[in-house]
Length: 439
Figure 1 (cartoon, one colour):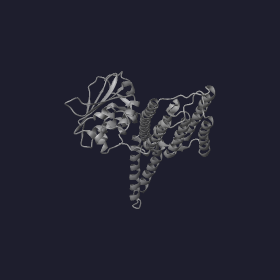
Figure 2 (cartoon, helix red, strand yellow; figure 1 turned 45 degrees about the vertical axis):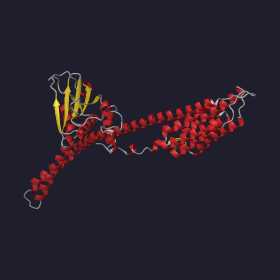
Figure 3 (cartoon, helix red, strand yellow; figure 1 turned 30 degrees about the vertical axis):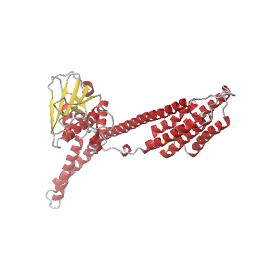
Figure 4 (cartoon, one colour; figure 1 turned 180 degrees about the vertical axis):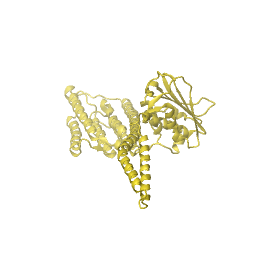
């Protein structure tokens, strides 16, 4: 029903990590590493190879300076570049850990940080390669490292069983947090895509309404000169009607001015802004306007209006409601076998529209996730065979909820088959005049 922009299919911009983010994190690491080395060496008096430690810390600071000079602050690194920079961080931290006790150093858990950063922003294959590098570094540090800095003249022996436990803790923490970060980031990106598509759909519907008003304004402005032309044509017709040289031309001029007037009259009727009766949309008219485009697909659409002693709801023409209901109707028609039933009811408090079809209903794995972007009524097996993005249902739900509606999705109770969707609004959200008047 809606064409979506290409940015929904092109995710390369998301995998470009902003350089300034990495440099700020690295400056924080440089400060933290420097303070830690100074406190351990001079605060506790432990035997720390300060020269080598600060040489590695200086490498990290030099990397920051180089990247800041070489690229602007807003530069975004491509996946390969970001992976290379994060790999440098893994190697630099591994070097520090090698000189300060390996996995016996409590700061060894920081080997997880570059992998977590990568999982939130980089493609899976780059994150896996970085994770492999980190696991390899942790494995080497489990067997090879200088002793853990301790008081002069004494050595702190760490049991290998504890080292093995730390290795398992680092690897499991890395895997769990990276997977969790990846899932959260992927869901956030999907939601951002879907909301962007929703905004585009709403803007398109609003632009269509605005064009109606623009057409009516143009018709109004052109009406006066056209009337003048028509008046002059009539006078010329009276004066020259007996002259056979001008008869055909005058008749053509007269017919074309009438045609122009008919065209302008139709344009004027499109206005939803300049004519009050077009701003107001009774509930029955709303339903018919939504259903009309879907009656020619071989599916019977029945509309049932429940009896009520309340005046019919008269609302304002709302592109969000028209598009949202239209999408739900289209979805029902697509999956129905023979018939779609639309039931409309209203009372003093609420306005409700129910849409039922006789199709297979919602797939069980979809019914529990309705409202999420990129989901549709097909089962996983059917979606694997092809289909749309599945954004339509999300957009319809989002637009209708913005109009004040609440939506319920379900399958018909057995032995019936088909899907059931109920949309309901508080009456004050739909009615321009309130519910005080009774028929």
